[in-house]
Amino acid sequence: MNIPSKQNGEKTFPIKENLFIELKVDEQILLKIPITIQEVYQINIVIQDLIKRENSKREIDPILNPSLTKSANTEAHLINAVKNKVIENIDKEHFGVNEICKLLGVNRMHLHRCFKSTIGISTLNYIQKIRIEKAKKLLLKKDDQIREVAFLVGFSDPCYFTRVFSRHVGMSPTEFVKNNNS
Image (cartoon, rainbow, N blue to C red; front, side, top):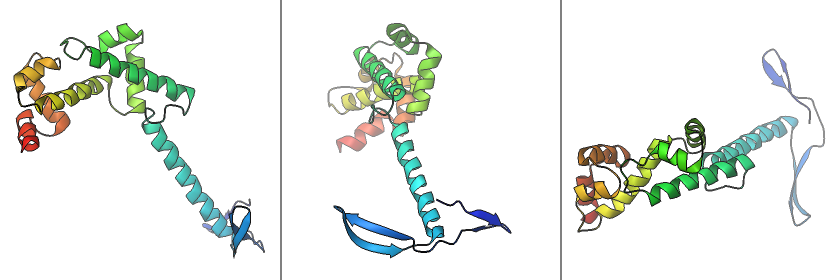
């Protein structure tokens, strides 16, 4: 493909005759549309942009697409392992990033970089997110009180639990219960 050149600040395209786009279905040509080299160039830009967007979507959440690369697969496996360890130890107040690093045999900084690059949040925020998701389920049960739920998901201080819950959910546990039990 000929690359456009710039003259007087404007892109110019070499003149080519007889350029066509052929629309095919099962090896049969349905349409043959004349096209200029400028239109080919513009289509190429659109296609490259779509490819970049699609690739960036895959990179954002490798858990949904763990087979992209060996690196993404390793990171997805590590994130899944962290999730499983948090769920196993969700009621333990002092179970956090340091304990996960010891159990999985990974460096704390490596784990942090892995989380930031793949899902965009820190390891601590991820752990809190898992705890809060479990707390939301427990709060919807009629028999669990906020203080009990806080302890069940590893918070020894109900006030701190309320602050973390509010930051993640956008409302206090009491408001959450009222909004979801009506």
